[in-house]
Image (cartoon, rainbow, N blue to C red):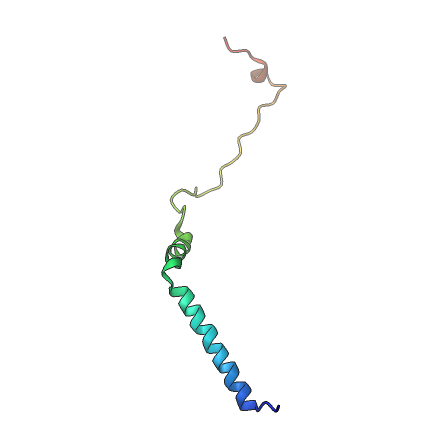
Length: 73
């Protein structure tokens, strides 16, 4: 069986269209709407909760200092 180049081109075009239609259907399906809406808002999540600067770690007290050995009354 001889496959003509034009038949191969038509088959690839048809396959590409079917894949494209499937992607469009998947993107517009109602069952994916909630997931896509959540993903669309990810860049804006936690903007108000993030500090402008990274918190600086608190230094641990030196065990040999007078304040570390002082007993509270």
